[in-house]
Amino acid sequence: MSDKYISLVNGGVTGNLAKKLGLPRPSVLRRQVTGAPLVTGPVLVLGGTVGSGKDADAVAQILVSGELGDALDVRRSADGASSVRWGAVVVVLSEAVHPDDLSAPVRELGGVLRALAPGARVVTISRAALADDAPAVAAVRQGIDGIVRSVAKELRGGATGNGIVLTSATDGEVPVTAPSVLGALQFFLSAKSAFVDGQLLTVSSSGGTTPASWDRPLEGRVAVVTGAARGIGAAIATTLARDGAKVVVVDVPAAGESLATVANQIRGTALQLDITAPDAGAKIIDHAVARHGGIDIVVHNAGITRDKLLANMKPETWDSVLAVNIAAQLRINETLLASPAFVDQPRIVSLASTSGIAGNRGQTNYAASKGGVIGMVRATGPLMAATGGVANAVAPGFIETEMTARIPFATREVARRLNSLQQAGLPVDVAEAVAFFASPAAGGINGTVLRVCGQNLVGA
Image 1 (cartoon, rainbow, N blue to C red):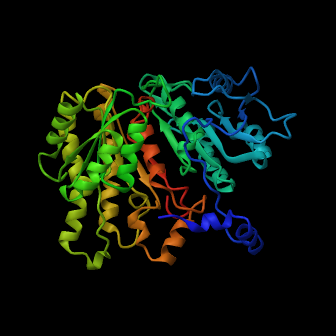
Image 2 (cartoon, rainbow, N blue to C red):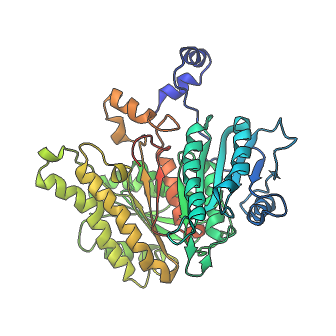
Image 3 (cartoon, one colour):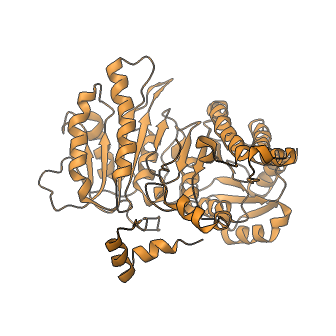
């Protein structure tokens, strides 16, 4: 499951040869290491002029204060800092009301792109374009989406570009200081978002809370992860446990040995269960409450593929994928939403797929199920709002797993390189995004999908 090409093109002799031959040279991505700084250098905050750009000043103050875990070295201008290698650039555009307002901050961003440190981050903060906006306001806000996606494709050295979009809520406009804005900013700046690139994450309310500790935001929470015996599921369980959660790992009895190993490693408990059983939801709740005193987070990771061209697909091939990947989740969620045990700011995080967004040849059944997941979280989120709960989905692209390791070499290489970072993601990249959605800081993000795909160049 390793990508030896990355090692070769970043090595001494082979790296020089690759450079001379003009071969693609994907960077080694910066990933989360306990105790490592949030960013790799000073942070430049652009937007408005100092003292008059209210939102930009507020964001700069937050970064300086250490509210995101580290007290950062923050500058409001790149003037006189020609030798600085920037760890991040935060472009605050939430007060822009006309496309002309983009000119100064975006040109300033362009002026420092060559001075970004390896693994740097570019993050925009803007407001959503709404149907009742004035044309100029809608134009500038929608235009920022294009900026984020384009800049992300220009970055090099493992740097990524993403955006936080604030929308209007029932309790008024979401401020740039809302907990979920800070949570999303912390996630995008950190190494946890290594394989998230070119994405725009919408914050739809001022809900959520910033954690007492960014290192252990899930302290005191109980999480359930399905399909946790190996691969991405095991990585999710391990990451949630790292963040402080007590974790119940669930998988089919045939995977019992591997499941027990994961449970022992994270000091959680194992539940052998067929999630398509009618009483699966009740058994999950009963186990979590009996063994850990409650249930706060459910991660629907279990899934299967039975790829076949639609013209050749048998009914049982179609039905089995839909049963596991979406029907089981719907049934379990109905039980969770009716349970008095699942009411303390609960979180549902489902695994979708870029196949469910862009489609994939030979995966009509899989794409239907994963597209179904996206629709499900969009409709489930509002049902959870009364308890402070949210439902969201993570859509992985090409991830290094046992399953993708079986893809023929040439096809696998093409799939690995067709994204802005020119490499596949790792299971932990998906797990970090799931952990963020499971955190208290994500309480203002509801019914959305975050792609973990390195900004696939194919599809949406």
